[in-house]
Image (tube, rainbow, N blue to C red; front, side, top):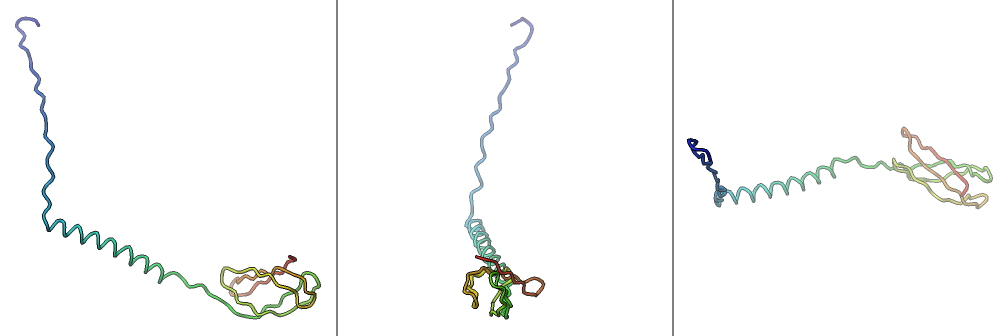
Length: 116
């Protein structure tokens, strides 16, 4: 080092990690209550969702179905929900198997019969 220049010492500061504050029995009790509240809220939300979801509407009525094979029209008692359904039926006249699709649209029953 050159004369006349003072040596500079750099001091390194070390910081010690602070210890977390000790938990009191009240803190533990509050945390336990909060955990229980979260669990109860989750259960209540699932119950509310189950209660408030709309019920499926099921309609029972008589449908006129035309056989796709012989063309004869026959009546059949059906029970249809909003999502519709597909049935496999035999024609009461010609005994051939057909697929019948039932669908509720604007509170009106739509019936389609296809060859199986």
